[in-house]
Image (tube, rainbow, N blue to C red; front, side):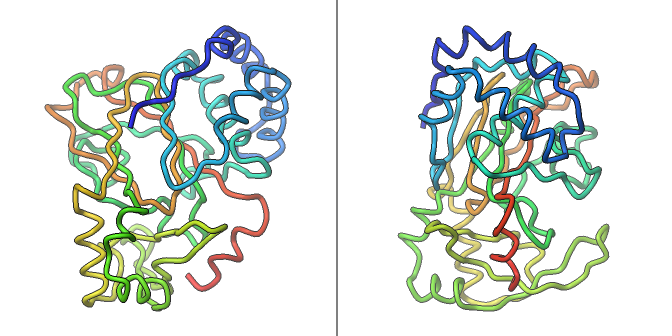
Length: 290
């Protein structure tokens, strides 16, 4: 895959977009603030035409080339990312992260082997964002502010369409109809919850996956683990500065290992901004059974 270019008509007004959003008051985690941001962006014809041409976002990730200048400002950059999420998915909200309560968070190494994959420079196995949460988000967005100078740390997304095509149909049926369990991390008390591995949402398959925390074992889950970790089923995105990736959260994502050590200067370390998005209504009911 190749990144989709930002139209010149939109590039020309990007400075104005940042000025608009710098003056938008309110907590980014609040729906009212997100609505004001979306309304402000949609007043701009070039932005309106841009997001209309990108919809709908399906199983194939949306990879946007540079041009939105999210690194321009620590104020307007996150607002523009939230605005992109809110206008790409009309009627949706950008929910706050459970830890910290922010709508937009940073992914950057803070010490090589930190336990959280959002804070280390190790490979991150494929997983569904919000796996521990009662209701995982619908889609995720990553914006690269600064790639690692040494390379590596590419974002990966499972090619779920291919995975389901090559999988044993009996296994697919078990993933969809079976009832499994997962436990949360030690930090969250290792509580046990029901889990449905595969379901269909708005006609799209949604794979809820994080093998390390799935308690059940067996042939079908072992087969799924092999398929999820098969490089043939992975789409690889070496995000460069100012590039953005939007992906359906039912296609688990991960990260390749960083090449070389993490710089001692935090200002030189790999830095991504991330947020999630989900419908304002009707989404939670889809996950009542796990």
